[in-house]
Image (tube, rainbow, N blue to C red):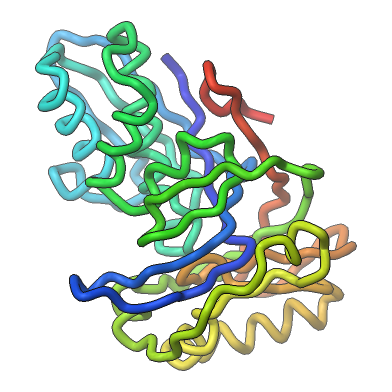
Length: 273
């Protein structure tokens, strides 16, 4: 079974309040995009898990893929041994949700491999215990996410968009560090404004991210100078969503990915476009 594990972007990101458990309530419009990791999952005579060397990820219980595999086994009591291989293309610690997407993809793949013992809602609940962004990937690929990100409300995709992802090659942001420094608490703006193109993309975390990683503020300015009409950090960074008519952007120290919004149907996973 070969599956594509898509990245996500936040088309807006709003922090609502800090909870007693230390997490932050958020509201964000998530979109799956056509930047993928590829994953192979199949039955084997013994457990095997590998990631391409460039990824430099742990291969033990700290990895979201292993967390997902083991969570599925605990829930279903299906212990068949598996070969799982992941070829990563999604930049790490960039706000693109690669680890969460990998976990969701493993849960989906295992559920298909073993004749769907779990419902989508059960997979989403299981995913939420692995990471707040995991449930999103079981939506149609375009959703308003609230709570700590685990409450998913699908939104109809008006028009599929194409844009650029700009990812600094050598800057990786710590989500925990960003949230520890975040202080500004405000109320959510109207989702309808964004869906009717009455508001530009925005990310309320940008000021604190730029204070922690000032080089990112400089890169945002350089991206605007290239001609993009909207440049917004996705998640807690370090990647930017860049919207505008720039055909072949180039900037030293920044990797560019041409992407589009994607969706999935209820009975299939995301496909490569």
